[in-house]
Amino acid sequence: MKNILRFRSDQRFKIVQFTDIHWHNGEAPDQQSAKLMTQIAKAESPDLIVLTGDILAGGGCKDAADSLREVIKTVEACEVPWAAVFGNHDDEGNADRHELMAVMQESRFSLSQPGPEAVPGVGNYTLSIQSSEANASAAVLYFLDSGSYAPTDIGGYDWIRREQIAWYLQESAKFTAETGHPLPALAFFHIPIPEYDEVWDFHTCYGVKYENVCAPQINTGFFAAMHEAGDVMGTFVGHEHVNDFWGDLHGICLCYGRATGYNTYGREGFPRGARVIQLQEGKRQFETWLHLDDGTVVHSQPEHTPLQRTFTED
Image (tube, rainbow, N blue to C red; front, side):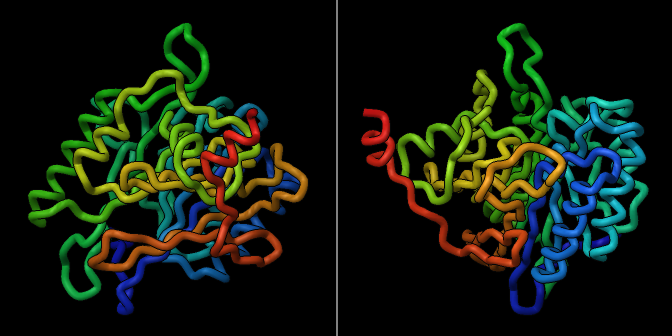
């Protein structure tokens, strides 16, 4: 397999998450996004770049496939492996998810995969990270297509389907059987699951929430599946451009990325950037920090407690 992922000799593995780039047609804001991505990748020297959806503002692209190739050109120039999942806006132009995935797979460093045809969505796949000392899986990354919009008349956003959850549990069980124990794992998708509201409202979180958590109105139990399987330590999403908080819910860190793209909405005083994630081989833990457009690296985000919420709403 090309671009095998492996822990470094210092037993670390670093991921840079870019999210919500919302690329249109290469206009000035898009070029600003490209410059930011290049700048952060150069500074952080990641082992993997992950794009967590809304790579494109599909409806604003003259030719979505060409627009995606422009984004990929920037990522490929970093000369590290990269992987992606789709958001709700990527396929709103003249290319569907299958066509966009085919464009991704043209690239030298791409690890993106369409996933099993029987599983809903395009882009449900796993990547294993090999041990620094042996050809054996030491950690696993799950990628899921969280869809676009609700498939029923309730409105709102799509949800991770039960067939996807069954696929995740099957993959998790396979890795567990190979090693004799659940591997440390992370999961990447675009639309936050409903538990992102729960962790903010009832647990201590770090970071800010400047807009509502736009989770689906249906909870299909993906969080429960991850908790029961015992492998996923953290989930990483985008979707909301001015939320960047993370919090621990029953042993799983629910994390927002930091919005990357300039050709979309933001908030004054909330600079674009990326989330960085670093795994340590052999340990069920990870570090995470933000890297912002002015070069600032944020290791400590502001604390938010449920007590603060109570005082705010009274």
